[in-house]
Image (cartoon, rainbow, N blue to C red; front, side, top):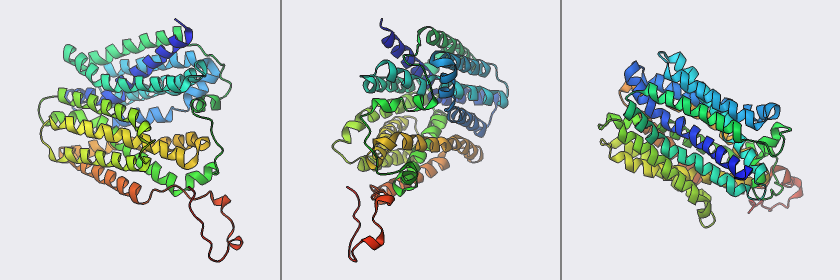
Length: 421
């Protein structure tokens, strides 16, 4: 098998595994752990927050390690850190241990995916990197579909969440060995910027933007899109944390919740896959508003339904809305500010979504005091409605770059400055 194809398979396997075993399935395992260990819902939410925070804060680490020890050893280290986190989780008895375990999981996630793999694919497939990176992200998305079902199967067979974590620890160690044997750099990493901007090489040639980075970040258009992304990511992260527990509280155990999580990931994946093509015919702003509306309706549905069967409808509506809104926001940044700035602006907006880790913690705190998650669902529905209204009413293509606007003394008395097309 050609080396580049072998690397593609190994990297995609890594993304599939880390997605399946962390964010998308942790909520299921927490449901069984909380009941056995007597933890509060706030504690469960905090463990999810530690996972997200560790993943976000460690994101600058892979490029630095890749420069020092290469991509192969960086990803191998990620697999071993992930295995250590799972092994610690299998033996926890207290919250502090589990917080440390989920933090290790977040660090391991960052060291395996996505930046190291995107760099590998961009350098091993210079002519078809855009297509191959698309396949890579599809593999990660499928991990989100399979993860809850795999966890449900392992816990169902073994009857123990500790066995699940132990199996995942062994699987992570096996993944680390696979990465060690297969991964090779096509190009030596000379700088962290080389890794950070590797994915941009897969995009069409960047045209020069009329904006500077500082001006773009201070524009109303960017701030509104960043706000929308923070709201969406907060709700999505929280749903991953609490959906299984909420659905189980309606009756039927945790199995319907695991199915709902998988359907949510599947619907979101399919929606993201089609949104790009839709934006060629439909306004991305309209798709953004539609996606936020669907998510708002889905979350509101959770507030008024009392049977697990409705979780399926929630998952489909919310997943489609998530896919539409998330990708549309990225496309709007590209169209508003140009390809030369889009990568950095998306990175800044994504960094801002680290605030989403407060969502699971807040949801758990509210559930401990009210006995359910309905109040946080109502708050999220209101936030999504606000984001939708703001996107429909206030979000517009930015005017011409401030520096490019003629000074007032150079204008005729009745002249108007028209927005850029």
